[in-house]
Each structure stands twice: as structure tokens, then as C-alpha cells.
Length: 548
Image (cartoon, rainbow, N blue to C red; front, top):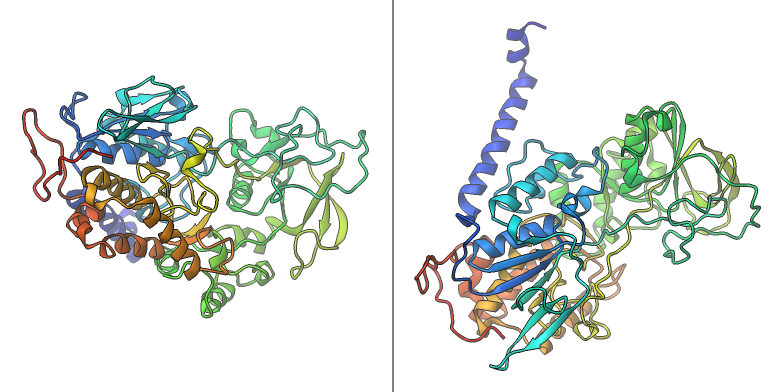
């Protein structure tokens, strides 16, 4: 095709206009919402307080950047080495990318995405850029796992937090950003070699635990490659391991769907997914996904069947059997993917609904079930031949045992927290993106800044602070409003619901209204200049009360 024809093609013109608009919108967001970074590593020279951030993932870097741009000193503690900057994104396959449009994944206002659905390397590049631009490099303590966070009483009757028994000066607040994905989760299946992954670990969750009722034959062991989905395209897995081979993926969540795509991209001859449960799969469409996230009730509702019917007759057309029979769309985090159902439809991936019983020398012995059955129901046992087995079993949930148990009394533990992220016993402990279970929206959006600025507001304004009684009351009210919701009242939320919580935070306490624009948009509190008492604070006057 000659270049005039190519460039005058209406489709190419529309795509070019879309790309220009896409970048333009991002620059508008930057101009309006980006808080200025420190000019050099010595700023801020007169900080309002000190904040410890635990975890140097996407949420940790963003939270720290918001803190320092609003005149708070910050230190990031990260257990991993420098290569672990970016958290879970530094441990996934290079083919891993955003499931949602990147306009719904603006974890910081300074972002410039090049693609609508960026892959791992672009995401890590933006995390690193924000980290450097906001002078966080000298403030990050790599290879420093946090083992204890202790309350320290001060002379004026307030308290601070000491990390690891005093390796740093005490902090006024703590932001825990360890996320919900830690080490790769390995399940144990009979017939798995003892030296593979977590086969020796007996502490498996009920979600991934196999029905090992079959009598074990030690000689009947699968001796071919067994890979966790997170290492499917790593250097440890050569091209010859996958190319032309029959790959069986155990797991049907986002990790499983992604593993199927990665295996096909690496030239697998045939791919089979063994799915214990059917997961809702929604398209990568920014408008559709936004409308879903705008459902304000945070649970399955009487009219939810309209969304489910729409998906069934559009996205699932030709593979309607894969529509979940026992779970509503608003009962768990859906998988966002455009290609997987097409792979099933055209035969590139075979979908088997069933329970993996054990591995054999030939493959995976599976209890194959019909659509209207539940995991563990009676089915037909069948061995699915395999040359490679991929365990798409996700990641372990990180522990927060470095925090004192008194911060999370009975009935007020993750995710049953104030605004789903604050300890109900002490508002100065924030767990952004480390407490939720499921939701529709994204954990990498502008709420990271909002939650951080709520914490900063509480540090700056004693009158805005909630008491433990108030915070527990908030949790109790949400429980009452969402009683009977699948997964628990706070176990699932939509982005609209989160927005309602933030708005209520202001309007149920009118004395917080003066902080409204600061909390929602980041306007009003900036770095103080040397010698200035309140420089850079055009909207609010910082109170001089003690922080706690």
C-alpha cells in the first residue's frame, strides 16, 4: 500500500486522532492535578511530619510521592533488593499488562502512558520515573524487611511509630502498601515431584487445595516441566520448553487467562485450561468497564442480570457455556480480557471445567464436571495428557504481623477497616490497597492519592480526626447496609462505592469540608520554603496542635 493511501485511510486517521487525544488528555491531567516534586533531595527542609511507607510497589511509590510533594518527609522500607522496585509488577511475566485501560490506572497524576494497555516494562518504567522525579531514591531502604512497628509515647502525651526498633527516627504515621499479592502460591497435588515449588508445603488454602482422595502411587509421578504462571516467560523457561508442547494450565483466574495467552505466544502446540470455577470475563473496553465500576451498591442487585445478559449475548457469544452459573458479576473481581474467549471459540485453547485430583506420569487426573455443578461435585474422572503443567494459582496474601494485633481487634480486621483502609483503633495507620479482597474498578487509580491526603489532613488538623468509636461505627453501618453481600460487606466494592465513602467522609463532618479540594484534587498544601512559616499553603492554615 502506497503511503498516500495508507495515511488517508479513514481507519488510520481515526486511530491517529485517538492517539493524539489520548496523550493530550494526560497532559491536561498533569497540568491540573500534578503536585510539584521537590527540587532536590534536601527538600522538604521544614516538613510537617514524617511518614513511613512499607513497600516499594506501585502504591508505595505513589503514596510516598504524594507525601513528599505536600511537605512531609518520607522513608520507604522494601524487603526486596533494588530489582524489586515496582512490587508485584517486578515479578510477573514481561507479557503481563494492564487489564483495564491505562486511563483507569493513573496511580499518580504525573504519569504519561504510551499505550492504552501497557505491558510490564512500561509500567515499571513509569514507577521508576515517578520514584526518581520525586526524590524517593535516597529515601528508599531496600533489603530492609519490616519486622516490627511499635507505638512510642512522647513527652507531650502524643505518640509516634518506631520501625524495626529504631533504625530510623520515629514516624508520625505509617502507610502499609504491601498489596495483596506476595510470593507465588504453589499448591500441592499428589504425583508432583518433591523438589517442585511448594509441593512440601501443607498450608494450602481451601481455594487451591486439591481433592486428594485418590490413593497415591509414588511411582506415578509427573516428571515433565511444572511451572508457576509467574515464571512462564522467564529466563528459567526456555523456548524449547513450551514450543510445540501440550500445555495444561491449572487455574481460571486472571493468572490462568494470562498464562494461556503467554503459552500460545510462545508457540505452544495445544493449551488446555482446567477450571475449578468459572470466572466472569469482561471486555477491555474503557466505557463498559467504567459503567460497571459506577454501580454504587457494591453488591449483586436485582437488575444486575441485565449486565450479565449483555455479556452473555455479546462477549460470550459462541461460548455461552463458559458463563458462570453460580456467581453474579458483582460478587467477585472479573477477569478483563478480549482474547481468551476467542482462543476457546477457535479451538486454540480447550476449556475443561473440573477439579484437579492429582498428577500422573501422563498429565492431570481431573474430576470433569458439568456447568451447573460446583467444585467438589461428582463428575467423571479423566486424565488430561500434558507435556508441560502451568500452575496459575496466583500469589500468597502478604502478612501484616509486623503490626500490633491491638490495631485490628476482633471483627475489625482486613477488610473490615475504616474507609476499608484505616485501622479502626488508630487513624495514623493506613493500609492502602493492602486490605481489599475483590472489586470492580482498579487498585491503581487516583484513590491512592486521595487516601494519602486523607491521612495528611488528619495529621494537619486535629479537629478532623475520627475516634476509634466513630471508625467502628462507620464499619458497622456499612455492614448493616450490605448485609448478605457475597464475600462479606467489605469483601467486594465498586469504584463508585469508594467514591461515596470519600464524599461521606467530608459531608458527615462539615468541619472537614475546608479540606475537600485538597483531599480530592491535591490542591493547597505544598512544600514550605526555607525560613517560611506557612509558605506554599494558599488554601488552608495549618493548625499548630500536636499530631496525636
